[in-house]
Image (cartoon, rainbow, N blue to C red; front, side):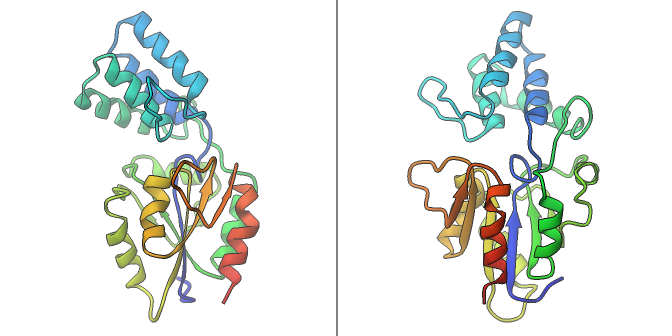
Length: 227
């Protein structure tokens, strides 16, 4: 583990693992609890809007998973059924029914970053097929530490304390993710740097932002190299 005092904290879904596959797997699993026509309509809506964060009756979903939750809840799917549907979708992760891709050039960036900083992957997803997904993405050796079930945003301060405690002296953190409120806002509140993938929502103040992760590579690398 690099002891430069720099920590780069990556999100997983929507950041390191891209594409609609897992979200659509979640939508199909949730739709199975609904009448056929209603479920098919839900899946079509998710297929059309999983990336746009389009409002649903005035509510803007955080991401594709939140879109599924909002739509299914409005159709009467209860929380326990939604949780079971989500776990079903995670069991399909990185397979033909829930394919994922890595952003171009990410493996090379991570190799460089690990010479400059400690690189951590923190995801709210449980440790279900996570190792298999990283292997599929070509990122098995991309991270110094992988933290599943991270409970972002509420547990981010504790997560930061735990990771920073592994270093001697002052530490600087850069958090990289696609959901401001979950991945970046708690890190920003601690006075650290943030890199947002996608549109900047109202009230967000990322240090860096771009439409996709590869466009952020120069800023992330430059931050890691800085004194």
